Image: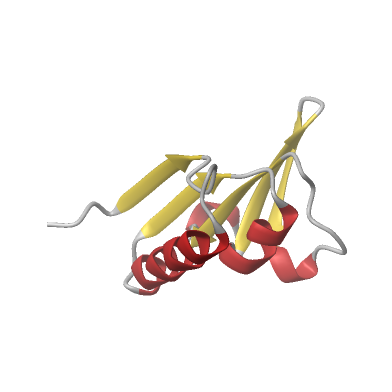
Length: 88
C-alpha cells in the first residue's frame, strides 16, 4: 500500500514551473487522501501554493501555524502540507 507519511527534502529543487505544478497537485491529492506530506523548501511562492501548515526553524527556535495566518512566509521555513495533528 501507499505510505502514510511522505517526507521529502527540497522536492521542488530543479523543477520547471510545469513539473512543480504537477508535483503540487500530486502532494495535495495525497494529503487529501489522509497522507501526511512534509517537505523542506526555501521558495516563498512554493510555500504559499503547496503548503497548508508550516514549521519554521530560525535561530534555535521553532514556530508553527497555518500558511494563511502568516503575513509572509520565511525563506528558511520547513513547510508541511496535509494533516499534522501534533501542530494544532
